[in-house]
Length: 238
Image (cartoon, rainbow, N blue to C red; front, top):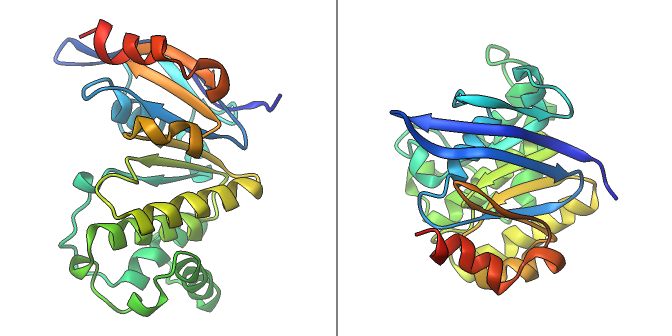
């Protein structure tokens, strides 16, 4: 069995003294495609943001490659929810994708020709080369998601955290994103993905975390993806 690359230990996060998640214990296996599913308000985005050190936990820890410090985040490419992004920011598609290279050089060093080559290769992978000079604000929702995946690819990270990357996009873009994720998985990359469509979990993912403020079930899809566990998360705890 593969080793754990992300560990969440007894994690509780509260907003205004109200728990968003309680006592989470999660191990994400290296090289896995792991879905995080649960109803609205289950704490899925809170989990992702806490792993990224964007939210401070009330108690418990998160670690990446056995490191609890922010230094470990250089190994993660993070794709936030679309609503968390300022789409009016004046930047071209190529500018946004090239930002994925900054983790390797710092924000104050200009990208060189090699960085631009990697960014263009990432755009080619997700079939967006022809849009490289387009302003990000001019793109459709599906195109924007492709661009943010390309930025993550340009980062060349070991781990990808993606918060609802398939929400509100066309089926062609969805298939392209899933195919790209599976190809990167073959290269040893790890994905932790907040996902909303329960019907596609068995097709797209090999591991799943079923969440509703606490962990209802976690493990290989073939073992824990059951009607009982889904009902426990979506209906019994409401």
